[in-house]
Image (cartoon, rainbow, N blue to C red):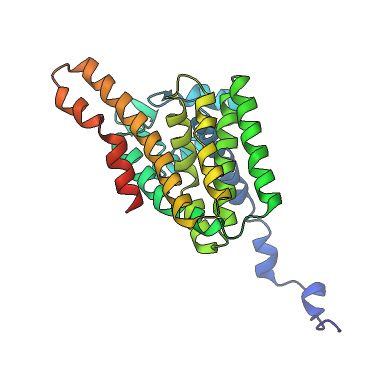
Amino acid sequence: MGTAPQDSRHDRHPSSSLREGAFALTPVRYRNMAEQIATAIRQAIANGKLRPGTRLLEVQIAREMGTSRAPLRESLIQLEREGLVVRQPNRGTFVADLTEELVREVASLRGVLEGFAASLAVKRLTREDFDRLETILKEMLAAARQGEFPRMVEWDYQFHEYIMRASGHRLLYETWVGMDRKIRVYLSATNLMYADMKSVVEGHVPILRALRRRDPQRASRVMAEHLGEVLDLFLTKVVRKALQRDPGRSETLRQAKQARRLAVERLVR
């Protein structure tokens, strides 16, 4: 089948507007630089190199990255919009704390999305898919044993992302991917709560077993229970820290002991 003929006039005599537009590349390069900086900072936050509460010193970061402060400031504004950093007047910019409210919101939304995805994926996963999920868990365990936290977090993300894609529900997957940055920060912060990183891997084994059972309801429930347990651990540790600062908050601790049950009930509704 022939191709449509092209108007050669555009090749021989480019318009003046096109010639002028060719000089409009600098703003694009500038924005790309700012986005590259933002990406590097996101990754450092997600893998735990930049912990919550860390002050981001512009002069130091610009020096380390070999850039000026202008694109750095633009990148920090973008990260603030995403909720990853906070700017405090007369104090500077800090990595945002992963608050109880944000953890609850991310965990509950992940429970809905990933539980639904798991129920769909059980009907679609092939033998090769299960082999891939097994490989991901093995890689995650190897990273945990070697103490390579950033790599373990990445494999953790890949495990959940694989199940989301396996659901075959494009809009569901796109919605989940839209939470990508917050999910990565969430994984980093909650995984740090485990005294033994191998426990993070062990928490994913029941999910794989449930998927192999080909039972949609069971797969959805196990996924929700997994996220509920992570939420329980995080809230318990947050509350304990609060109690160390304020010993009078015993009622809060009592409520925290019920976190897993309440979280799971909330996620599986």
